[in-house]
Length: 334
Ligand code: CUA
Image (tube, rainbow, N blue to C red; front, side):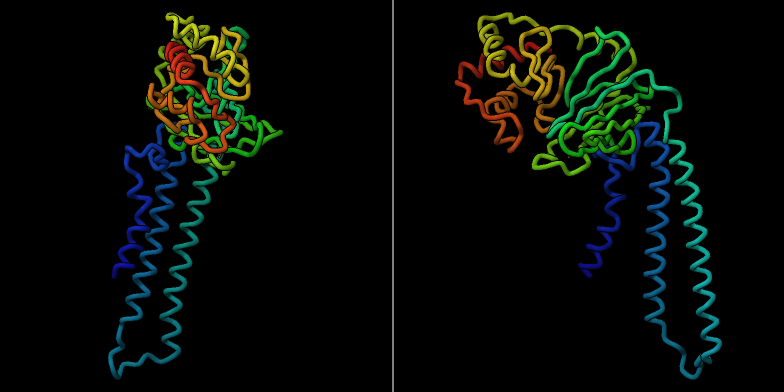
């Protein structure tokens, strides 16, 4: 009985997983592409569950049914009674599968390209184990790079150019649309449109090494005016240090962190790790691994290998004053 219960719970998992607050709930959509596919997903899941339960029920009923004594069915008639069930079952399944085939082909065609030509293209570079986002623009002075958290205007389709840099990753924002692989030596494209304002959690969906699970991303779907403001703020150069400690931190940052990280408007121009310009405008650290608060920021800078073993960021053995200075400088980068 317990096993049966566990099986029933397992079968109902997809349904229970549909809680609205689950961050990667792909059964509820906030975007155009996801909105096209989600009804098909629900319908095919329901149809499949119905078939499983119906067959199980018929098998159970059949095995417990006792034939009344003295009323044995002659073999020929038995054969015919069975055939009706088989023909009925095959017809039901074939019609069901045909409906889902047509529906699937329709959805594939409908989600292949954006309803209108996207005005915005974001280049996504997948790294072990973080995301680089480059906002492209006809005007080169408006192009900038950020990491792990992207902003898009709500109600407008956005094109993504997916560029692989090391191994195969997969770009996936479950509530906005389908996943697309990011493959070294090849540029894939995808498009997404958020219909509802909010924050969408994404995840690398292709196993890419030790920290694959710690390769998340966030997409903020902003009101168009907020998006324009955010873009303008990102274009600002790094904030100048305002205190003595932050001034020390600025030179420490360039010396200790600048070979791998960029802080636009300073001598720190490394490309190995995430661009840290306006770091404090992000809500997470290390590709969605930690909340971006003072305590976590300290912990991450001083001991990244404990949080994310094998990540390219080494433990720098910073002294306590060095750590405090660098942290103080970074906290001003809003
Ligand atoms: Cu990148 Cu998994």
